[in-house]
Image (spheres, helix red, strand yellow):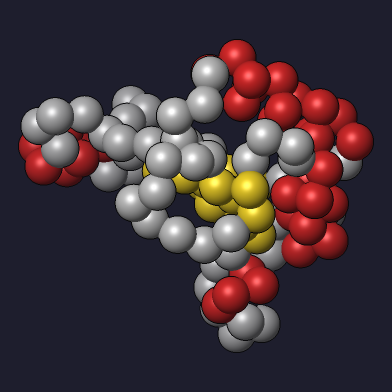
Length: 102
């Protein structure tokens, strides 16, 4: 998982020094199966909306490689997530069911 709020993140100390009010609701993670796997997981979600946006209140997810193209260094199976205001357990349940299908 790519999230600077985790102590295991390579730039955690930098994030701590810069993000005085918390780490925010943006994170990324990789799934198996490359871009097809990322598309499958994103397509199986029911609570998350598949879209690119910043600043909304709804939870969004996107297979980032689609928007950056084949020459991008972004891993093929990377999903970028923007967590919104939905109930936490609804989001967890949605991710779990989608990942179980992958």
